[in-house]
Amino acid sequence: MSDVAARATAGFRQRYGGEPAGRWAAPGRVNLIGEHTDYNDGFVLPFALPLRTVVAAAATDDGRWSVWSELDDEPVEFGPAEADEPGGVDGWAAYVAGVVWALRAAGHTVPGARLAIASDVPVGSGLSSSAAIEAAVLAALVELGGLDLPADRWPRLAQRAENDYVGAPTGIMDQSAVIRGRSGHALFLDCRTEAVEQIPFDLEAAGLAVLVVDSRAPHRHADGEYAARRKSCERAAETLGVAALRDVATGDLDAALARLDDAETRRRVRHVVTEDQRVLDTVELLRAGRIRDIGPLLTASHASMRDDFEITVPEIDTAVEAALAAGAYGARMTGGGFGGCVLALVDADAADAVAAAVTAAYADRGFAAPGTLTVLPAGGATRLD
Ligand code: GLA
Image (tube, rainbow, N blue to C red):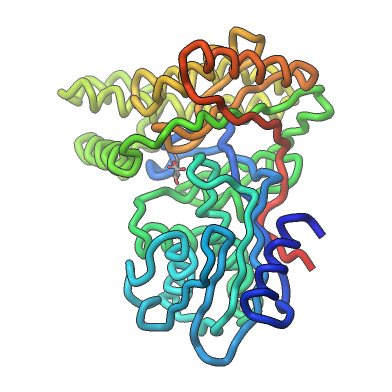
């Protein structure tokens, strides 16, 4: 049993006594490319990480929920009243209550349960620790309750938990990545139709690695800025008379920009439309087995986030520049922005040297040391035993 599963099991035994009925796991994610395109009905290409959150759980017949996590000493308890009231539970446990809420709102009978959560997905690093909790809890409750809910409907449900119960206006990418991700593949997702294509992304065979740098930059106003970007995109779509910015074709971009009179909105739109195209171009290259050649697209995506969408911070830009200077094929911020992680595509045998170069650049700039790890695409939410 993996360490994290053993910790969840030990937590269950210690808090509740007895054995859990099972253990369910869901991973964190990085996004290879396609940032802030999901809520514009566009394209994304994330992959699931080998870092996982595990829920050890058992059903109860009292119709209530008790959740313990390594983040806290005491379990959080709630019943239908708190679960049925968005915001009725807060903190990390809101992601659990949100899943119960979303299931009940969709008409499912959710069994009472005891849950113990352990996680290797760092919190607050932009690697979707919240989606990992949602997906693992969803997998547990669906099975414990024998609910008729196929996994392809889980991402929308988990997103609803996050949007409507927790109150974060995020898109569908994170939940899709951590639920539908497949080992050795990146998940090409059309966020309008939810159609997916598993794109082979065999880094090992190509002698490559994805280095993830955790900037450890404090998230500065991330929630408010995220919501502002989303609003700005939605207003622009309205002005342009399209359902979402996904409907602005790359070839029509200049004409669309000419119809917007505000320079900031023009930059936002340019990011989204060019980013959708970069996802499509990346997918083309990967289908042709040309992994190294996606590097410039990753770096162009970063420039677009920095200059047009304006969601990067100095620690993030420093990591990208240092990785490129040390020989990375491409590098970009991954996730919502204003902190979080950078990913760099590197030769596997150069990963340590690139990580060291980024760490040295941080020291030069007086930033706190970054975290670094290399990752391979892993599988999505699953029952462990
Ligand atoms: C966060 C959100 C996602 C997506 C990204 C930006 O991770 O949860 O839905 O919008 O930001 O691409």
